[in-house]
Image 1 (cartoon, rainbow, N blue to C red):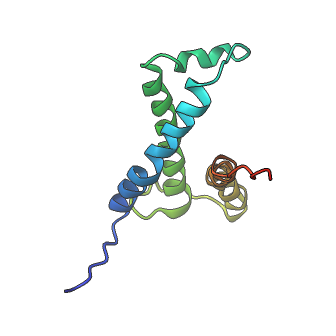
Image 2 (cartoon, rainbow, N blue to C red):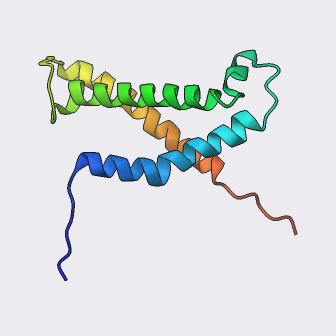
Length: 120
């Protein structure tokens, strides 16, 4: 039997979102929005009703697409290009800025999935 390696960005993204992103979003929504009392943060009440989950996912999706668009147009230029000439000194500022969402994601993962220590 032959083994096939599929090198497709869209397929990887789809599988990554289905296996990791959707459960992560559901966990955050259920744990941090549905189950908590947000009297001090009145603006978060908009996410409480059933339709709020669509707004929550929509905001996350828009931010993710914006991030990917900025990576593609300013740094990679692999799939399409807007012919934006970005200087090397500007890239030194932009790349760390674009890394912030992923770094935040991994730091949050460390707190969310951390198991409480058992008290003897």
